Image (cartoon, rainbow, N blue to C red; front, side, top):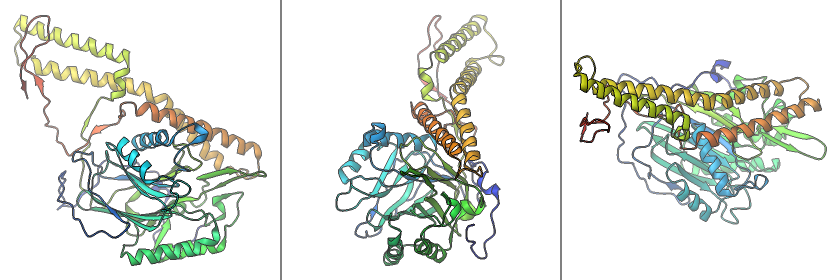
Length: 483
């Protein structure tokens, strides 16, 4: 059982199963805004990075999803994927899963590769890598990936505590929302953990960095026997080193605290004699931000790796209210021939009704161009939503069913001893990963999904530009724009 933290209110399972809100309550003196002040630039420390180069019209989120993922290398030879193809799957996954900040381990990228990826994905991603100075592609490498479509930082600072092993990201967005995130890739040798954590804490103090709000990554150690299969306790010195740091920083493994008996693993490997599984990837949360975290997830992703990703959603107390904005047509549906035919039919109907009103001199109070235009938009919106549901519902339902079966299989009493149960779990995991890849590919064609909206605090009184009609029978009109 996990160790408790004194004087902390215990969480309930409800903390892990609530739906992420699109809006965050705001105080009486907080006003929603989309403008940002001139970023503060402070003198740089050697080895640190600060940047404010983000698009001015990025979509903003009132809450953000923070995720950790061990990459298991830059490329994926087992999938015949180059590093560029693998990073394409990363971009797709961040889009479909709505990940704002992705902490990665074992990136294995050098400066040249990082620059190439920056150019390839500059529209959607900002990549910050802490690579080892010698042979950066050989081992380790931690970093952060920022989703430009979901978060627009006013300040962004990367502080390298231990090259290739530990880095701190300080981010500020929406003028008042801040987060300090420590990304670690602990050594595989448990005997090195004591020195590793001692160096992390010492370097943090030397750089005058605050205690992290989130400490996440691949810790290469499990604190409890339940987090390994077959169940066993890990190296005691490595556990003591980790617990000493998190007690000093007043942090805890909130997912395990809320799910004390649930079994879930983030790493799997096959040895000559047995199949090993462990929950090596975790997110530790500080007391300051814990009340504002929810929607904890451990799940398979479309990224080819031997680790699963761990996610949490964070809604800062200071976040302003961000409206849902307007629904938009998923661009991927523009390849749907049946839908396009139905839209064309609606367009013909629209033109016919306008021509009829002109010939019959229909009273404008009864029917006019604007009312027909509104009906046309409503009809094609309904058709698009029905088509999107038909396209995505089948695969989404299958993914949800597989995830449910996988959770139930993980928590069977004989999971650590029954070979048949272990084989069934491996089959479920393989099927789930395949569907995740297929779903990410389908949804990211056109870089939008059925739930996408134009973000912003917009009221209901927005008018859409239409073209002033010059009614000539048999043709659509030309003219200037009016509102």
